[in-house]
Length: 109
Image (cartoon, rainbow, N blue to C red):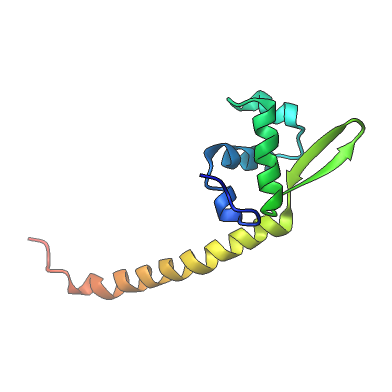
């Protein structure tokens, strides 16, 4: 299954792309540095980075003869905000439900 261009959740659907995002949390890295940490080839890392960049999750910049990749703060923030909005509301509803039904449980014998 391939990620649709511009879809951060599609891009994060692949375990290798999630691993790349996790590695980039500690700072910018080159394709070689990422490939050294992953069980995939450099060309595969480059393809995954391209999809992550198209999804707005990764940026790149030239440094000498190599490119360094890093997390795109705005893209990551948009994903985080969406998840907090969706799951935050669900967690709040669950907590209210649990609190309101706690008194309805039969006493332990």
